[in-house]
Amino acid sequence: TDRRDMSGEEKVTDDLLLDSDDDFEYEEVPVDSESDDDDMSEDLESALRSLATAKGKQIVDVVGQEEAEEAGPAPGAVTKRPEVVDDFVRNFLLKMNMTRTLESFETEWYELAQTGQLHEEDVGAVPDIYLRNHELDSMTKALRAELEHVKSIAGRATATWDKFRKERDFHRMHHKRVGQEKNKLLTDIQRLRKHFGHYEPTLKELRHKYEVAMKEKMMMRLERDRLSAKLEAYESQMRTTELPADTQPLPKTKKLQKKKGDSQLPPNDRENPLQNLQFPVAEVQTFTLQKTFKGHLMSVSNVAIHPKKPIIATASDDCTWKMWGLPGGDIIMSGDGHKDWVASVNFHPLGTHLVSASGDCTVKLWSFEKAKCVATFTEHTQAVWDAAFHDTGDFVVSCSLDHSARLWDVNSQRCRQTFRGHMDSVNAVVWQPYTNNICTGSSDKTISIWDARSGLCTQTFYGHFNSCNHVTFNLRGDTIASTDSDGVVKLWDVRMVAELMTINVGPHPANKAAFDRSGEILAIASDDSEVKVWNLIDGEQICELKGHTDSVHAVTFDPYGKFVVTASSDNTFRLYGTLA
Image 1: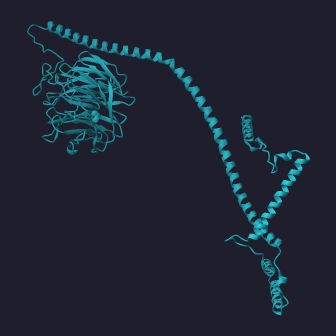
Image 2: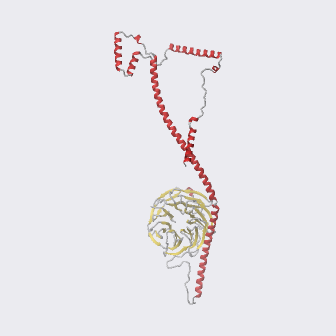
Image 3: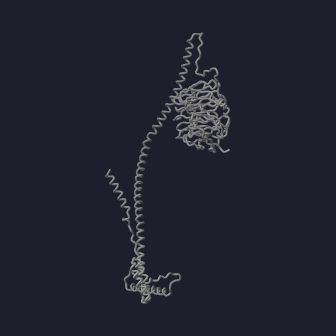
C-alpha cells in the first residue's frame, strides 16, 4: 500500500512539474533597429549616407529648439522658474532640522542686506542640477512606494494563483477518480444485467406454472364443493328412505332459513332499467379542484354520495363518519359509535339510512330519521372492510379480514348467510345491480361472484398477481372493475367470464375505482396522491386529478357526472368539477 501511495505522489509531482512555467517554450522576437535597413551593409557609401542623415536630424532638432525659445511660452502654459539660492538654503536647513544653523544664516543674511553689502546680482539662482536631483529624489521615493505596493499585490496574486492551481489539481484528480468509479459501475451494471437476463425465462415459466396451479386448485375446490353437496343430498335421501313410513323428517337445505320478521330476497333477477339507456360521457378533462374540506382528525378512508341529494358521507380513521352538504361543505350529521377506524360507509337506496363498517369487527346501521344507530352486527371475528345495501334496501352485505362475507337482514337484524371460500382477507364487496349476486375482491388475488340465496360461488376471475383492493360494477351491471396493490386495474365481462382490459397505473397501489354513469370513463384512486382518469373505449389516459398530498383512498362520481369527490390520507376530501 505504501508503495502504491509513493507511486501516486510521484505521479502528482510529475504532473505539477509538467504544468510549471519553467518548461514553457518562448519564441524569440527580433528587435527592430532604429536605423534603416541599409545599415546592415558595411560599404563606405552606406556609412556616409547614415552619418549625413544623423547630422541632418540633429540640425533640425537644434533649429526647432531655438525657434521654440524665440517664440516664447505658449498662452496659458505654466513657466517654472529656478529657485533662488537663499530659499534653497533655507529649505535645505529646514528639511534637515538644522534650526540653529538656519537662525545664524538668517541673522547674517539680513545684516548683509541692511548694510548694503549683499547685491542681488551676486545672489543668482540655484544651479539646475540641484533642482533636478531634488525632483529625481522625490520621483525615486514615489517609485519605491509604488514598487512596494506592486510587490504586495504580486505576492497576493501569487498566493491566489497557487491556491487555484492546487484546487485545479485536486478537482482534476477527483474527476479522474469519479470517471474510474463510473466506468467500474457501468461494468458492474452490464454484468448484473447480463446475469439477471438469464433468470427472465425461468421467472416467466414459474409464473405460468403458478397461474396454472392456482386455476387447477380453484377448479378442484369448486369440484370438491359440488361433490360434497351431492354427497350430502345422497345421504339425506338415504336417511329418508331408511326411516319408517309414518315419520316425516325435516328437510335440510343451504338456502336462506326464513324466520318471523325476515325479509325475502326477490326470487329472480329484475330487469335493469339502465341497461338500454345512453348517458353522456363525463367531461373529466375539464374538471379542476373546486374545494378542499378538512373535517377529520385522521385519514379519510372512504366517501359515498347520497342517491338523491347533494350530500356525501365520509369515513375516517378517527373512529367517526360524517355527513356533509355540497357544495358548501356544511356538516349535517356525525356518527361516533365505533371503537376503531371506520373503513366504509354506504347510503340506503332511498337515502334514509347509512351503513358503516369498522375495524372494531362490527357493522352498524344508522337511521337519519332517528339520528342514531339502530342496529349493530357483531358476527365478524376480525376487522370489517366494506359494506353495501341491496337495491331493495332490505339487506346489507359486508366483508371482513376473517376471510368471509356475510348477508345481514335489515328488518330482522340478523345474519342470514355466510359466504366462505376465499383463502385470505376479503377486502371489497358490491352488489350486481338489480340482481341477487354479490361480487367480492380478496387478498388471495381472485374476484368471485356469489349467489346470495344459496351462498355458493358461481364464478371466479383469475388474473391479478397481488392483493385485490376494490371491485365495482358499471350501471348496466355487465362489467366489473377490480384494482390491486401492484397498481393494475382489470375490467371483466360478467356474461363471458373473460378479461376485457388491463390498465397499469403502478408501481403505486390502486386503491379504488369508479365508473361514470356512461360506463366509458374510469377514475382510479392511486397511492401516489393522484386520481388517474381513463377512457375505456380507446384505452388511453385522459387526465390526472391532482391536489392531494398523500395517498388517495377513495373516488366516486356524482349520479349526474357533474363532479368527482375524492378522499385521502392527508385528512381531507376534495371536490373536482367545472366552474358553474
